[in-house]
Image 1 (cartoon, rainbow, N blue to C red):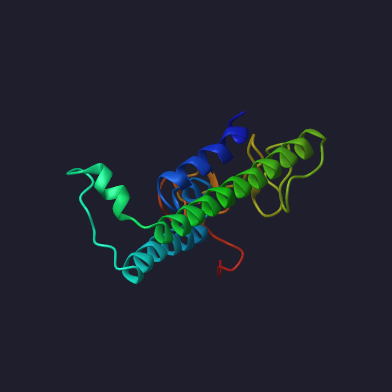
Image 2: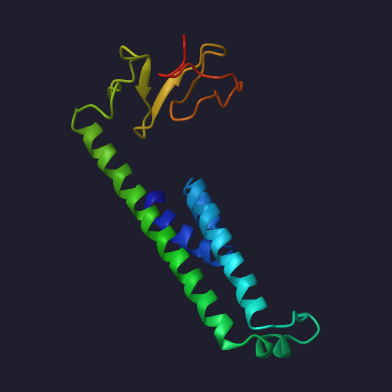
Length: 165
């Protein structure tokens, strides 16, 4: 259920603040690109059309009337594209998570080096209940996300495939 609502939440947050929906989806690069594009485009359009900044608290109707259509339409279009992109990325992630859970229930392996029994394989990795690859931290002994290069419990670096261990 949570995976089905996540794309909608991401789209809504992308409308509220450019890039926020992508941050919820852990898409750091996309979040930065969308935020810079929308904010930069808005500033560029305000400068291009020589729009004076107004005070929306003093007179809200004068503020909306002062923004020309040449500025508001492209900005609205960019925000809509950002929300659509956040929704589609969230949906793709939800579909992938569903596929991984179905594969795990079928008795097949989930990703390289992982099995469904929760027992470590040759490379020391296991898969948790949601199919996320985990690894045991050599410092604190707790299981942590194998996709990051440090233990989120004790913040010690994890040995990776490229490390000289």
